[in-house]
Structure formats: structure tokens, C-alpha cells
Image (cartoon, rainbow, N blue to C red; front, top):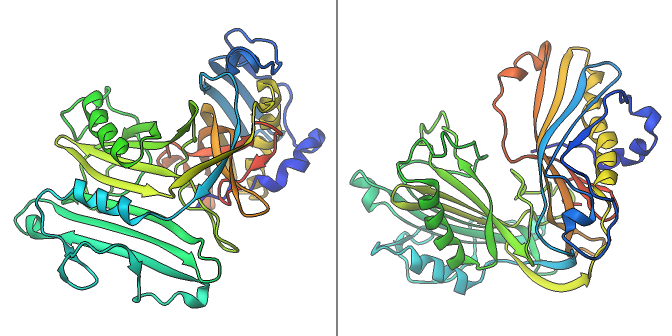
Length: 411
């Protein structure tokens, strides 16, 4: 679980003198900046004064903590941005049955609950888990086929589950649909860059792999489009091939819901918060071998049209202050010798943000994607040896009012 610890730091960030930031490091955007004025004409990038790349460096007075920005700036080609209602929901029986039918492949499915041939039932309350004391009921469906696996081929499985509140009937546990067709225990992972444009465990091209993934995704939900892609890592306990892996999110009037590694599950220590709506697809040479669909949302009414967004200069000013604060607290540890955040992509898109009345709005946000590099003695001795996590949003800023959003909690 990520602990970004930044939401509570925004007030401190406004007191610039307390940040310990070395103002000698002045960020330099590359390209030609436009006037920072959100006029309701032209593309958003032109309105907000956004260049295609951005470079900058921010360093603490101690020299231990630094943020290095060498990033592509990704902006949707739209003229305006709305706030839109996002309605989290469970999967429907029609969705589930259509998915099973599409992946039937002549298999005889076994119902895990009865150990008998699957009779086509929908998702039902799972009596194996008594979660009523926790305030919700679990609903699940698990079907599988081991025949091919026992003959040296693939294991097939489809698992669907979610939890509903005993009081309100609303979601209280993350909805997930997971499909696997493989001898390997595949799972959602970060997205490593391709090797010379291809996944090392495949012979098909990226375009061929994407065609398989696009066909699958549009059968599931037509308003989802690819947001990110790469190749999966090799897991030491599995020793799996490096297949193509794609991430798809809703796109609303040309604006994507921003992806975030691990964003499917928010911290629900105090109350349920719905996470990122995303579909992950893994593709090998013969097609799709893994699907995971988390947190479906319906798109509701428009809450606010043509929102006034902060200029890009204003956003970067907030980032320069709060970003450094979000990592500098680690300097309390005397064994920390190097504490670096490296930002490689900055993207404008939507995030489903929980509101005080427990509804959700798709809010325009800026996500800063980056890596962390820690080194020193003690607990940081092996920091440089840790693998990079790709697709992790290290900071999220509301594009309208500049507040910092903690993706770990969803608001």
C-alpha cells in the first residue's frame, strides 16, 4: 500500500519558508509556453500554457532530498473539461453471463461452490464468509476448468466478487472480475517498458497484441480505451514469460481517467471508498490470457460544465512546494543519505473523487508519475537495488483548485 502522506501537507506548503526548498534550482519548461490564461477557446494545452515537456529540479537545504522532473506532459486534445458524476456499482448478472459465454471455448465449467457442473447461475451471497459483523455481505461466483491443465495445457478460471452493505445495500467491498487462461499464476503488475518495442515473452508485435486487447475490452465496455501498456515483469516465484500487459480506463468526452499502479484498492480502514475503475489485460501470442476488471462505474450527470482550470505554471508552483514536502519528512531518519523522486510523466485526466455526501465525481487532476530512489544505511541500505515501479502516481493535484489528493484514500 502506498503511503504518500501529502494531503495534510498542503497548508504547510503554502508557507514557502518552511519547505526547505533551495530556490536556486529553477525549473525550465522546454518548448514555447503560451499565456497562462484559461480562455474558453482553443485546446486546453493552449489555454493553460502547456508545453509538451517539462524539466526542473527541487532540492532541500540539506541536499539529501531532491525532485528531478524530466517529463512528457500529456494533455487531452479537448477544448473544455467538465465535472461528471461517477456512480460505482457491482457487476450485473448479464455482464457476468456474457463474459462467461465469450470465454466458453467448449469447456465444461465446474462451480467451485458445489463442485458440480456450472448451471449458469448468477452471482450469489457467499455463505462461506460470514462478514455480517463487519457490516457487509460478500457475493461471489467462481467457476473453473482443470481438464486442460491436467493434460499439460492451460488452467481456466473466472472469479467474480463484491461486498454490499447490510444497511444500505451499496458497495462495501471492491468489485472484481478476474479471468485466467494460463499455466502460470498471472496477476496485475506494473508495466515495464517494452524491449525494442516488443514483450520479451512474445513473438507478436505490439499492434497485434493491442488488437487482441481492444477486441476484448470493447466487448466488455465500449467507453474504455487504452491508457497505459508495457510488458509484465518476471515474478521469481512463478518464472512467467514476459507477456504484453495493457491498462484500460473510461474515456469521457475525450478525457481519460488517469491510471495509477495499485489504484484499484483504496485504504478502507474507516469507511469504504471506491478505487480506480480499470481493466487490465494480459496478451500472449495466441491472444488474451488474463483479464481483471476492477470497480465498474456508470457515468452520471454533468455536475459542472467548462471548468476553469489552474494554469500549468500555477500547478507546477504547487508541485514544487508540496512535492518536496511529501518526501522530505524522511530526513528525520539519520541513516538516510539519498532521497530522490524522479518524475517522467505529467498527465491531465480524470479521477473519481469521493465527496462529503459519499457520492463520487470525476474531477480533472494532474498526476505526476515517477520513481523513488532511497539509499543510505540501516533500512535504506538496499534502496538502490530495488526495482523501479512504472505507472505509479507519486502526487495528484486537483486541476481546478490546486488541492492535493491522496490516492491511497481516494480524496
